[in-house]
Length: 92
Image (cartoon, rainbow, N blue to C red; front, side, top):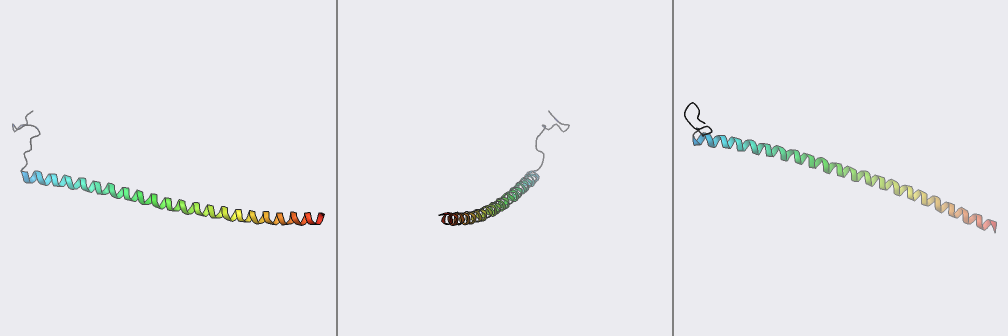
């Protein structure tokens, strides 16, 4: 198709300098978009690392609590064992 100036449709009528400036602008816009995506990705990665660290700390707290409970239970078992031995000695 031809436009009103009898030039082919889509033909670049800009000077090479203008075309180069437009390309530079487009390239800069793409680079800026890429940088924005990289920044978002870094933020997400940081959040995941912080979450993993918190999860690990929570898990450690749970394990510590379980360990304390196990120690208490073992003490109770030891005390009961002593009482049973005492009762056995007294019944003989």
